[in-house]
Length: 511
Ligand code: NAP
Image 1 (tube, protein in one colour):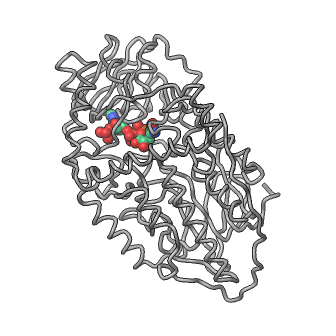
Image 2 (tube, helix red, strand yellow):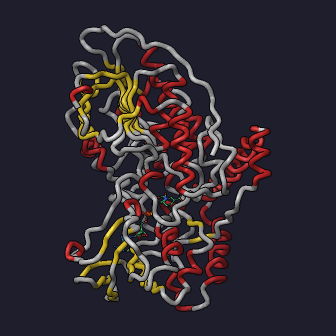
Image 3 (tube, rainbow, N blue to C red):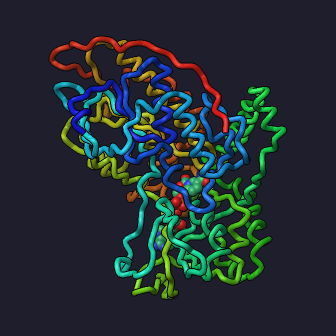
């Protein structure tokens, strides 16, 4: 839109999910108000806005899966549903007064680094602007992936992805093919099984599934949390500590996870009495290699008479018949893809053009890598939240996001200290050294040695998504920006005044 043309801001944040909203609060806390949040949709929430499929909930306990600076004493359940998480993010937006900063319906089309003026020129669907610094918080789970299935375009029925649920489509009495057995699919299957006439699950790889011990958080507990806020912190601390203690098994001693496999097998045996079906559902890789799934309703749903498990991937569609790689066929009215997201090939990377005129996708052609999960060499003053090797297999991503926000805040402080117009470009040697360290540690982890393929690995088989350590270690690694790891860039002339200072207070966000 014309009103935004030629606008310049200090920081442009891309995305308004947990990462983008967290960045916005942190910027305010640092006294920075000259920023915008560019959001392609018309509301906040990111993946928690887009994933509204039946049964969608977080498998990380809510008291840990929330911002430390915005505790919510009123979480209704230990594993709250999507609608509660989305509502929480809406409230964070209001509590911290973020709405004036957010540009809805503004999809970033392209951002190009201007080597002369040391700034990012950003083109969005609602106009263009420039920014000194870009904080890309688009997240790894934002662009749905539908596999290229021959004949899919000729299917006469309904087709949609788990992250683009068509709530107008009535599934009652329909014959449905569910594709995939990841975290999304195992929540969808028990939610739709009772209402569809037939459910055919296409399982390429079985998942390890542990029971989900979910319960209502009682009114008394919530009242206690409201009256004594430290009890919320205590609860969070316990949830965090238990998960930190599990990390060694994932990163150094995958053999220890055998005990957890036994628990998962018991979970299956309790619900699945048919030995043939049990054999189909039993994974042949080490638990933890793929994300461990939590559900107490998935196996009971699979045991119902209106469900067929096809132990093979979907490979073709012929008219209204879906065909598996092993030749199994089923005629269906609807196909639901629970086939995940573009994670190691995220589309935003094709839209970011760095100092050498290369896109981030080109720079990452051999695999994503970024210094401390944030800075890619040749992309000055551009940082990403939940960047390469910042994902977790067993704990809350909000902890990692907050660590990256510490790093972002120090990055901006360092720019202030440098004074005038300056930009920081991660040194290739520093990026390589960081990545080498991460990849060395990765060698012993269950994600690399567990005998599975997963979205944690890229097309070259390299794990560019997961952090091979504790969240505490990552926090320590991202506490400060080490200027020795960056080249300081200067323009021909320096003419920038300092940014105004302002502070915001901590806030409690109640349901
Ligand atoms: P995902 O984990 O990537 O799972 C995709 C599934 O689709 C896999 O089972 C995959 O099989 C299967 N698939 C792909 N092509 C197929 C084909 N042609 N035929 C049959 N199956 C096919 O995706 P997701 O379930 O959406 O989960 C993505 C991530 O989102 C999770 O790992 C998690 O981090 C997050 N998530 C979290 C929660 C939560 O509770 N916090 C809930 C949902 C999602 P293969 O295994 O053989 O590749």
